[in-house]
Length: 110
Image 1: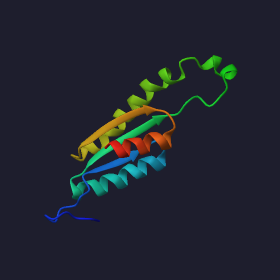
Image 2: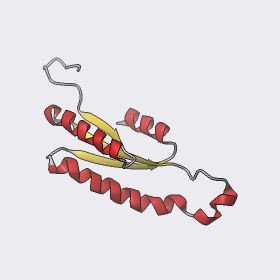
Image 3: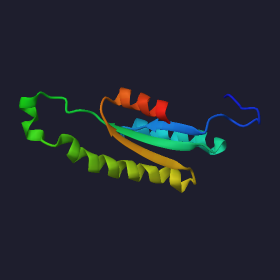
Image 4: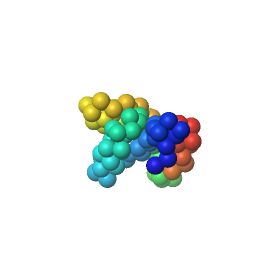
């Protein structure tokens, strides 16, 4: 791990993408363990991907993203309580798009 001139770690933020699976939960546990000694902020991120079907199939799923956003926001907010209980700083990001692209964009921005 790289350290700056003052002997402190350059790691101040850790991005933790989540799909709310058990594997993502394990990744959050690992990120929290890393963040504690570094006093790093956690950034929890979830991406809602576009509807995977054609327009004909999508008729039954009008407002697909609009329906998923409140549920995803609720799950993300609930997940953010875990680091807060450990006195870790955390922020959440919810976006729509292709997950890999959105996660890279967020990492570059943050």
